[in-house]
Length: 418
Ligand SMILES: Cc1cc2nc3c(=O)[nH]c(=O)nc-3n(C[C@H](O)[C@H](O)[C@H](O)COP(=O)(O)OP(=O)(O)OC[C@H]3O[C@@H](n4cnc5c(N)ncnc54)[C@H](O)[C@@H]3O)c2cc1C
Image (cartoon, rainbow, N blue to C red; front, side, top):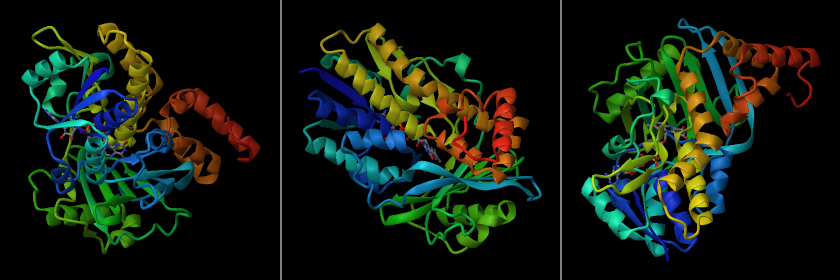
């Protein structure tokens, strides 16, 4: 039986670990926190996940919270000027619902399942010496430690990493008491982009105390919503989040006015520069380890892609490992395995997310406005969150976009679109 070690118990590491167990591999998982510590710890993300990634979890029988978690049937987009004029304001319909499960719930549950299914769980914050020891006792070592320090073992890929500093200052809160957005015709995530300020995301989620809402501010650094540095008190963080809602996105004020934190650990603040890294790191002994998930492709939450990306990475790795049979897990295998994920998901996710961080190009702003009148444009855009490669042939090219929008107008918005 082949032995595989995975360091890091997040979306990428745990999904891969559970998939490998199901395929009869002997799996060691190194986690820096126990399931209870994760469950009772700080929130880590707001993680909306779309159909493709959710389906990959379903295939492995890991969708344990699907029935309790509110479905996200549409994505609402509002684009506003700094003085509050809403130039675009609509909701696109997702072909398949998305969902958000608090990672405290999911990762704690999956970790327990991992040991129940016979996996070997080691609780420690791994360092390079641990990676060396793991590589001596295993056929393959995968490093899936997210934004943790071990990611710096993997060389930065400057070609795909245009940023050196955080592009957004993040502040999030899980809340009870969130009302529906009355002008939207289905439950969904609403994203409000305010020029010069940043973006507010409001979505239904599921946390340790049941269904809830989540609020995430993505503030432009130095802008009027970048006010969370040094604020540690959870209640004060929520108060500031709501104050910003009232001032910059008043259309979200009524339904958020009475929310309360789900628990004392339900807030986060921070920020990080998006980065892409090369997939293979060489340890001092010469042993090679393979990165996964955020270690290699760290996207800003602006595109709501990171957890989806980690799931797709785990799926690509699982398939490559199984297909590889008894072959050597050498550098060639590692690079080919990462390329499978990068070519099918990582590259498109990186391009889309980085585009959403720059000031929105004029042709994209125009598309958002046309979508006010033509739901098929809205639907086409929001369904690309499930697979950003669907944007390649129209979203990035002003001429293609103009042709598509002209075509929609000529058809009067009827038909399935290009
Ligand atoms: C505010 C916010 C909102 C987000 N919203 C979305 C969204 O809407 N949609 C979406 O798809 N993505 C979103 N993301 C991104 C998403 O959460 C991440 O991309 C995803 O969780 C990455 O999974 P991962 O397994 O690669 O890493 P992680 O989830 O970071 O898991 C890594 C694990 O490794 C552990 N670890 C670290 N160092 C060590 C060590 N030395 N030894 C052992 N264990 C270690 C960590 O504690 C952690 O448990 C958001 C992120 C943030 C911060």
